[in-house]
Image 1 (cartoon, rainbow, N blue to C red):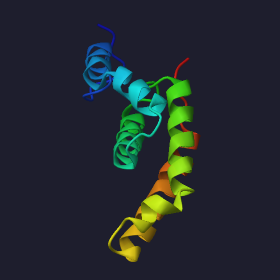
Image 2: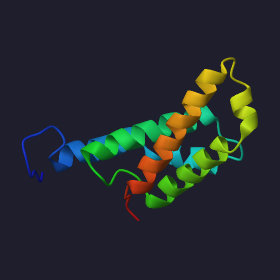
Image 3: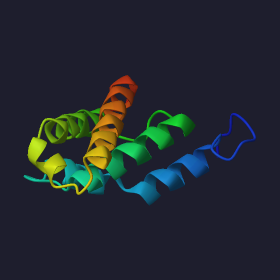
Image 4: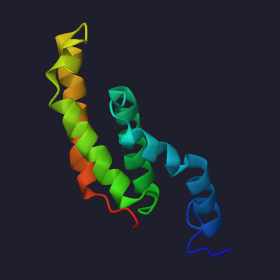
Amino acid sequence: MGAWGYKTFENDSALDWVSDFINSKELTKLVKQKDPDPNELRAAAAIIIQLHKVNDLWFDQENIDKLIGRLEDVVNDGEWFKSWFSSRDARDIKKEMRKYIRELKKLEGYG
C-alpha cells in the first residue's frame, strides 16, 4: 500500500476502494443514453465534483466531457424546466446546473 499522508484518502487502498465503489460504468451508461434523466445527470455532476475535492482522478475525461454536454443540453431544453410546478425552483435548478457545468469544466479526469 502506498500512502502519502495520514488522512482518509491519502493512500492507495482507500482510493482503489472508492474507485470500485463508484463504478464509472454507471456514469458511462448514463451519459450515453439517448434521453438521460436530468435529475440523474444533476446527481452525477454533484458527486463527481465532490469526489474531485478529495482526489482528481476518479473519472475518465471523456465521461466528464459527455456529462458537461448532457447538462448543457438540459439547460438549453426549456421544456424540462417548464415541467416544474414552481418557476422559482426551475430557475434555481438551472442556476445550479450552470454552476455544475462551470465546475466540471475545471476538472481533469484520467485518459
